[in-house]
Amino acid sequence: MNYQNATLPESAELAGSTKLMNQETVVPGILKKHLAPKGKWGHLVVESGSLQYVWEDDADNILVADPGHPIVIYPERYHHVVITGPVEFVVKFYASSAESVGSMLPFYAPNP
Figure 1 (cartoon, helix red, strand yellow):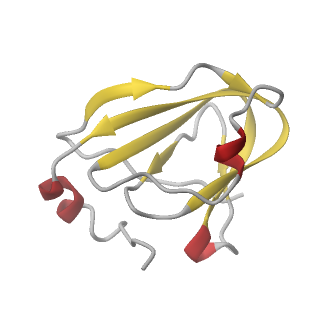
Figure 2: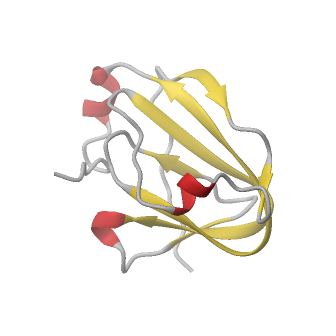
Figure 3: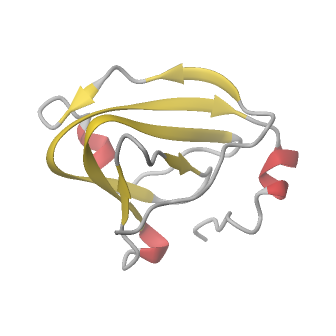
């Protein structure tokens, strides 16, 4: 299994959150190609179960998110979620300065 090993920028400030979702209440848009806008980061946190996370520009490298392995969602990079079974999760949204995006360049690869 592939897990992501990334952290939010130090300057990230919580700006909002989805409600707790599960395989039946997931917002349909999350299952389709979408992105976080410039300066906005996401943090997908699984409370129970697991799901798959796919970067559109690296679709062969499917990441697994579970209670011990959250996903940091980079701004301006297309992605989608795949529900693989029973799961409960939330997506928290953070605002951060462009300076922080620059500090993440080894991990940050926007989709052109």
